Length: 300
Image (cartoon, rainbow, N blue to C red; front, side, top):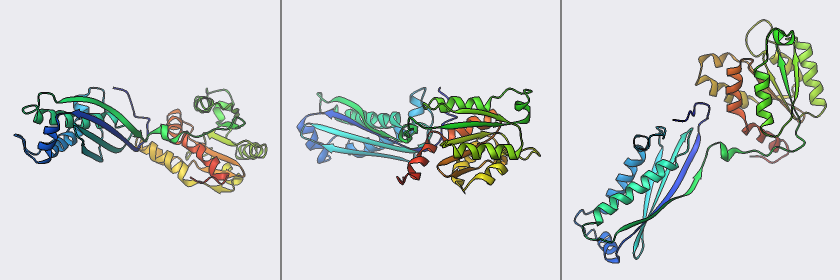
């Protein structure tokens, strides 16, 4: 089973259509509730809803999902029944398999109830007609001239006693979006960090991501340096990162990192630990790029 531990919850949905061909006489008998097994569509709807909930038990690689909604609608045409199944969930993975299972089992239930009176009944097709939600719905445009910088704040890394992992991780993530960031390593000196952030923002760097100095140690001063430079804080960004991390470790609540704006520059304080950085990157990117459209008056 594929790991989805780094994914974040979003509203996800899928709509599937299944088509059953049958005799015109069978359609009329369904309308009149004149079949040996009686209420065909109600039973098929219940079967489909139950099947959606059981998908992970039927399909080995499907994750158990806390389904929030299953809807099944029927359209009776002259010689066919059209089934539409809709499934929604606020979760980490898509729900198209749940919608497919719902539609198919509803079709099978109808097949079972029609076969005693219609030897020609046939399930013609089943296909996904819509899916939404997930990271693919939150793709953000990054301009070709986008400038970024990664600042590692660590006495031990600056002195060469410790190899940097978190900064390199941030670099790799930004490079995956076609960005070539500047890379800087500084000691845990508030004045140096402040001056560097200020200088980069004045040079027109769009995004500054720091790593380190967000904890409660005596030399953790990156947050203080950022506060001296920033014009306004953007609380929701780091609230999202901490909430994401808190579901994985209780220590996430101890990070003091903030997100801030200075002119046209966004500053993000990420933790110094590689795990904390990995979690923050998963929580914030690429959605955080949406801020640039907002700053240009684009709204949401």
